[in-house]
Image (cartoon, rainbow, N blue to C red; front, side):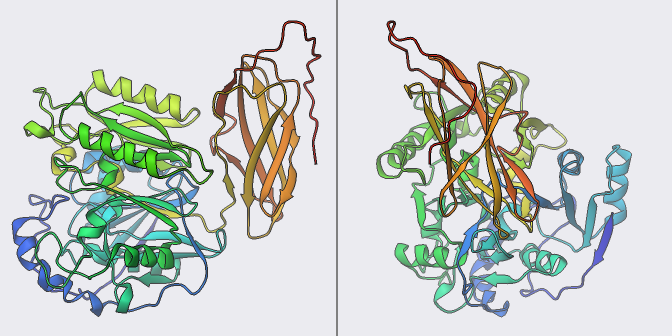
Length: 511
């Protein structure tokens, strides 16, 4: 049901920033903002000071089940309208705006169902809620949800109120990295988590916490890299914080402009023609990851490249072209909203997404239209959305099977967790596009489950997914879109010609 929340907030910092419809703020700092940044940073301790959570925490992954997204209605109404149109079919949409009637009429006139829309009557400074919005973490992996708020790296006090407003709306505890030895400046566009204690960022996180910062402020926190890692561990449960060199032509240095985590082991990476723009540094960063880090399962990361389109004149960012990117996308349960630009490039991007995420509905939203050219302000879909996780997560983690010579008997493994416990765990599989067969998996120990499928034919494609049922009765599939889409791999094993094997479509559970 549609709700309107009226909140009056006293700003922490008195700064004159125009939010007039004709003066939308870019993602990057304006010259006037750079001049007042030091004053802004000296005031952040006025916010409620909190210690880190005193219980183990886990940051939600990009693709996990969510119950809401938050938006700031600051211009670009065409793009925001299309996001709302798609999102309300999956989740509640919470919109920050001081002009509720105008936004409501815009949505209704566009034929958008607003029953799942909530309005919070609050002005914001900018549309870039990914950077200043709340972060979902869970106690003990799958228990109570709490929110984390970093020190925002922009002097935009109205934006900076949103985490507290969302915490109040959902009645969640809010933890701030703004006091004592745990002061941390950070921005959401430069953070990506796999939900298993691993996260990615550019070296912007180091630059903005070195005591001096990129704009010469004496009020930046002063931390070593190890101290930053410790803060992220205490507040976010991050055990491995992977940081990469910033890109020379990406002025904001946010990783969501050139990479996207698709699952625990897959990175979608923006690609440029050889030697063009940020292509060389991106490739160096990927090699750095592959040579120094592994996935939570100890495997090399799977890299999928997606071409970045030039401007209509053919220019790339190294020649003043806009920073067009397909990686700046957002998961909203069974949908993925992707920025689109021009058909000849969009069709390629859509195919790459559909191949990488079978079963997901890939929705393109024009971010380069002359009336809604948000990419010219250095951001797209991921930049203007922020998720709120579900309150009752049923978590399944799995390392996707890769093409290999497994042999006739293949073992499948996954983990499952829920606060009430796991009643059952099932694997569903089909061979070469047939029908799904299911089996209950064995609990090996703790949250680990496995089963062995015997008699798999050689050189066949296997598609599969998992289904977990919690003791409370909650059920979820992984991938969340299954059975419409699942994981796929090819068993490249070839039987010896002299060997005769009777294929078995049933299951042989090995304890």
